[in-house]
Amino acid sequence: MRTLILDNGSYTIKAGYADTQAPQHFPNTITRTRRTKRIQVGDLSTHTSDLSGLYFRSPFDRGHLVHWDVQLPIWDRLLSNDCLQCTPAVTQLVMTEPMFNFSRCQKQTDEIVFEEYGFASFARMPAPTLCAAAAAAGEQVDGCVLVVDLGHTCSYVVPVCNGVVVRGAVRRVDIGGRMLTNYLKETVSFRHWDMMDESFIVDSVKRKTCYVALDFHNRLATTRLQQPLRYVLPDFTHSKQGFIHGDDPEALALMENPQVLPLGNERFAIPEALFFPQDVGLDDQGGVHLAIMQAAEACGEDLRGLMLGNIVLVGGTARLDGLRERVEREVRALALVEDHVAVTVGCAGSDDPAECAWWGGAREVNDSGRFVKKELYEEWGPERTLQYFDKLV
Image (cartoon, rainbow, N blue to C red; front, side, top):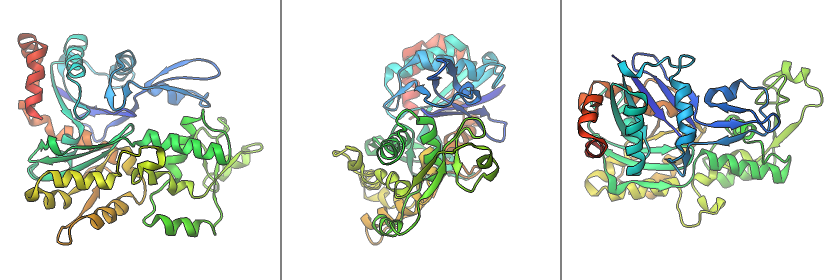
């Protein structure tokens, strides 16, 4: 029996069988084109040529899966013969869920997995738990890991000790990749081109050009003396996402009257919201570094030093250049002198921190105690199955 690992992220689904070398990245969204009004499910949106002004609909709202009318067509597409070629009756499924997921959402997930799709067995776990398992890098899972999950809709700081989440110490910051993209849209639309309807393009600009400055004020002063970075916007004929000027001279030569977006301090000022949420109107929240210290201190004196010595950044936003160094610097400034602060990005086996939960799920395949078989679900019912999964977290 094959095991399917499904990291159901709010931006992309990382899915693949445990015996494969790496997961597939599958957009967890339904899109509608502005010009043709065509609906595209999941990966079909990447095949269209009409990428200007796409309207996105996500199954997630504020970090929780609530729009099942959006999620089910995406899962149908993912499990079909055109993608994973999955036969649920002879497959066991490992799926991630958000931290502090609502019991109603958990119950509905279990019902859909067993009753709608008919998987042979199922294990449901929070993504940070699997990230902590992957961070063990092939060693035993026991130990203390402070997982900083920088996701699409929000960020969680989750202490995990001996494979168990220290629930009272978990902290959340309502800053994620989507907010950074929207912040960049507003900034460039005010300064340069109107791109408020171009979420797809601006997200590509963010991923290719943005970074975290180690010293924000010093970097701001030096940037004023430099020429801005020039980003060539796509024409959707020779380029679908655009590119940094000079990276693709052949495509640039084929374009007629290419539009260029100049980028100066936007490249590092946008990610600064991770440390100062006040920049985007979240006056009641501290930055990621403050959440890390609060989570570590909430674990108590015995675990605080261990947590600070093993901070792991995961999630798509963790790809930002310079983020690890900045987080380590900010946390060290807040920690005690005798505390050892160490920050790593992702896990062994993958260069992409967004895949960390998937690799952790692949490690949990042999833990049969985490799975509920379909026959047992039919005997227990949804309520007892819900209680069983809750005891494992």
